[in-house]
Length: 233
Length: 213
Image (cartoon, rainbow over all chains, first blue to last red; front, top):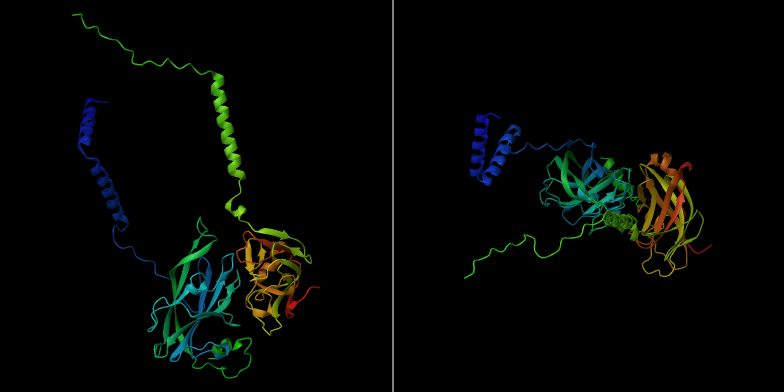
């Protein structure tokens, strides 16, 4: 080492002795922050836009694959004893839901597929209102269980005041995904929890009035009317 | 007045120097440590896990065999597969998959208070299917069980069509229990082979019946 280099080193050592340690850490943080400027710094990161689904296009989440097929406004399904309160009608979202997990998934609230679909901004309905019923469309089993790998057409139903959707042609439907939670020390069993918005679908509202076939009285056991009533629109 | 004599003290006070350990003593402690580690390893690798000490107690048998657990006695008589099932109630559930219809008889053994088939599963590979609630009273699922009197009828499982042709289908298991949480109680387990079964277009199932044959 040359004498010049040695002098420089000793001077650097004296200098570093005088610099408080706090400055060192602030300095490192400052450098890191300055470096982050290359990636946008403290600017709000641009959000990835949520996928906008077409009618019938499936969004595959961690637990369920959900395709919103139709949005139907109907007076009631009297043959399935689904009659809303006076002044209300039923807003029905028909969705094809497939369980992509390896365990059965219920359609109940808070633990099942009822959490995965919500209406976006419907007047007279609080945000995040769960569906009043989730039925299998073909036989109107309510809050049934979805089996792995078998897509099922479900009817998610909300009671809405008659006047709210008058003159509204389109409705945005929010599709949620959930986070996997393994069984832990306190809780037992794996589950999916914490729904978060992951896709949207904007569909036209079909208003079928009282619904065709509601007064035919046939097939009341199988509940096929729920299907044919909407399909014949 | 005597001159002050400096007192010379050894930096190491009083205690005599420790005797040197012999090679054999080192070897002994080393081996002792190895033994303790070995025993710890064995204990930690053989002690039952939470999963194991809370596990269900399976009672395994063949098709047609009467299997008895703590408070459940059941027989799996047979298995059919069909694209459509018509229950005696008139229910005919369309499905995007196929129906595995399992003919089961079941009874409680010591106490029928609240006894029902709350666990009715079909396991194929790592995937578990539960008996469908869609047939409602067309299957024996919603019926309660009685002590000593068998209820015989179908359980319908909705499964994907490709499952029947998969390799895992040859070693499926029907599992029956009294609680959907099967831990720490008897479960009846019957291996079934779904691979060899022909898929019928439609089958009709009978009304569940009470009584021992």
